[in-house]
View (tube, rainbow, N blue to C red):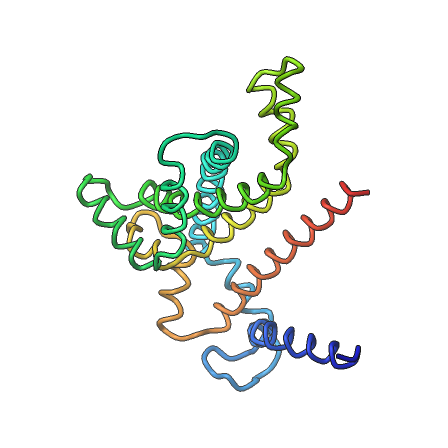
Length: 256
């Protein structure tokens, strides 16, 4: 393929991906509540979003939930991935297969299964039910990402460290974790994104006392897509873009 054809092809792909987002951001400045016709430029919808306290409570709930679930999933998933890589034990292949089953299972199946589990255990739906559910579907992604990175490490490094007198804890803190740090960061970003915008599983296990942002947006969108909702989504997109750019900048600084 010629260079011009490749450029046009990539341009079409990016246009297909980002045109809806650009349209959403443009209409967040539309001076009309429900009309899709352009009625003028205004910042009023961003002002209304900033003044909506209930909306920002849902944002804080989602952020706190995603941060808590990501931290727990990273801890348990990292230890599980290292155990699967370094040690041999009975049922290892079965455990690996169970991790893939959780990933490929439809969200609606996992959501209903967790709802039945919480009902049998008399667990009130709220933060803790959401926390357990989000940790459950985040752990397999952490294990697979970190395990894939661990497979590229020469196992003789751990043998050499043991021969030099390093304990298992020293091998873990000074060798294993630093070598797996890029994968751990990648898994953390993925888990945070999955937890922050999950709606299918959260819909089944959420309670009235702890409303998260995806459920809030879903309830707002059922009444019609308004410029206020467009403004909220635009702010979330800018926030996500800022985080991605910052992570890329930090990665480049480390390489330099």
